[in-house]
Structure formats: C-alpha cells, structure tokens
Amino acid sequence: MGVLWDRFCCQRPLAKTSLSKITDCSRWTTDFGELSRAVHRPRRGLSAPTTNIVSTESDCVVASGQGHFSKYTGDCMVISCCVGIMAYNEETNIGPLLEALLQQRLQLVDIAEIIVVASGCTDRTEAIVRDYCRKDGRVKLLVQRRREGKASAINLLLWNTSQEVVVLESADTLPRPDTIEALVSPFADPSVGMTGGRPVPTNDPASFMGFAAHLLWQLHHRVSLHKPKMGELIAFRRYFRQISHRSAVDEASIEPLIKGQGLRLLYVPEAVVLNKGPETVSDFFRQRRRIFAGHLYVKDTLGYKVSTLNGLPILLLFLQEMKPTWRYLLWGPAVALLECLARLLGAYDYMVKRKNPFVWPVAKSTKDIVQAATG
Image 1: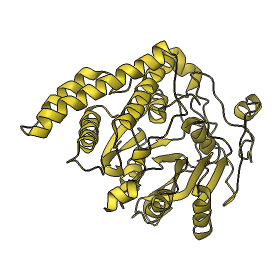
Image 2: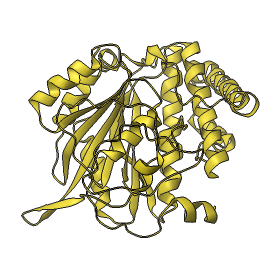
Image 3: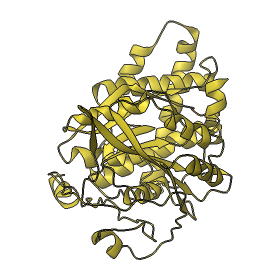
Image 4: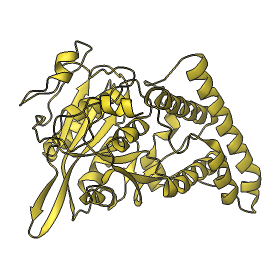
C-alpha cells in the first residue's frame, strides 16, 4: 500500500493553482484521444479537455493545486464548494434537484457553482439544465456525446472546477434544505478530507422491496456510524485530478485516495439525502451485483476494502435490527438471501467473467424519486 500511495497520492498540502472556469451553458463534447499531455502537463488557463480523462487500471493523478477554499464574510469564514451532478437521462429529477440545491439554507457554506455533466443523454436533461443556466449563473453544463461511465464524467468535472471542496450528488436523489451546509461545514477542520451524507429511501416500507430498501440503508447507516461508508452524496477535498475511469463505484474509489493522504473520512448523518431503492427484484440484483463487483475491483486495484465488503459485521448488525414483527421475521431473511445471491453474482462477474460494469444498465424503478418523495 505504501508504494501505491507514494506513486499516486500526495502526502502534503498542494500548491495553489488555477483551473479554468466553465462558460455558462457551454457545450463541451468529449471523445477518446491522447491523454498523456492533457493529464500530466497542466498549464495555467487550462480549458476543459477535448478527450475523456481516461485512466489506467489503478491510477490517480494528483492535482497540481488546491484551488479556492474559503472566503471571509465579516468575522465568519465561509467554505466555498462545487456541487457536481453526473446525469444520464434524468429529465424527471434534474429540475427538482437543481431547484433543491439552489434553495439550500446556507450560513458557513457557499455553493460557488453547480456543474452538471450530461453523458449521452437522449431526453430533455440538457435542455432543462440550460434553462437553469440562464436563471442562475452558478449552474453550468458539460456534455459528453457518449455515455462512458460515471467515473469518466467525474474526471471531466474535476478538470473543470477550481474549488477545493467538491460535492458529488447522485442525479436521482434530493437533498433536504440543510443538507449541503451539514455536509460541507466539517471541512473547517483541516484533518477532514471527505464527508458522506445519510441516504434515506422514499420507498413504501409496507411493500417487500420498500422494506428491503429501508433495511439495507439502515444497515448502511449503522455501519457508517462506526466506520464511514460513503454513498449517494459525498464531499471531498480535490487533492487528486482523476479516478480510474473503469470504476463502477466512485465513492469507494475516492475513499482510499483521501485516506492515503492522512485525512479523515467523516460520516454526517444530519446530511440527509432522499433516494429511491429498486422496486423490482431484477433491478435489485442488477444494482447490488454491480456494486459488489465494483467493490472487488477497488480491492483488487487499490488494495482498499470498503467497510461493507465483509459480510460478518453486517450480519451482526442485521440481527440487532431484527424486531418481533412478521415483516422482520419473514421478509428480513428473504432480503438477506437476496443480498447474498447478488454478492455471489457480483463475485462471479468480476472474478470469473472479469467483468467490471463501469457503464451499467439503468435500474429504472429507482428513478421516480420526485413522485416517491411527494406522494
């Protein structure tokens, strides 16, 4: 592990530099092309790359600067941040998500910019974002012609922000009014390198799949209280310039890059973000096996195990969560069985088929978050 960090990560604060701003409502298109000059020789005034930032199997190129971090308002230091949203055909939720971000209640935090990376969208996602660009100058749009994975979109975002603190929010989620304040304010402590919010599903817990979603995210919450496991909504110091474009689990790929620099991961349960779990068994398997395969990829390439990779502690927490009701007694073991099967399939995908689905099929039943949250 020491060799890995010496090669890919920086153990000290980075010198200040300036990355380019994105022109409001500009349309950047990306294709594959030569990487070496764009990645390894940053120049002052660097614009968005015309290539995807493609990385090798386990690389992380250290950023050459911290960028903007804070400003002072009176006697109070305000932490500036960039919120990044990676979107693929999110016309249903992208508007409400942008509205929720623009209406955040902020005191110690300033959202300097909101960058949406639209990857291969064939619906109205881009048009909706452009409308918000015209309404508020903080909203900016980057476009990829083809869908090439969330990690590739994140790399494009990292190249096009000068903010030291970057927030990543899944496009199919909704933050509560105080979520970004709670998530970003801990960066006033220089030892904090990454924070994660608490995902809360909007599924009906009276249905089997809704029960499964609530149970799994409750276990995720319990695990994170002791050993942070990031998901759905994270913030981190931009001390690196890219993650592996082959990663299917961006949060898990970022965790070791932050910890390798001697910084802390912090779980912030007050930073609540609403999401929606799968409503069908097929979507459940599709999502859970992809995530487990991605965690195995991170373990294999970065030597890092996320806190939920080992099933034994989760089993113990599962037993603690059990309640003397028929749903827990009947549905609880069924959910545990489905999770075990999904993990076995994920292990088969990665270890036997050598498949790491960094561009994955969409679990459609997880996308109507607005209706679920309001109805």
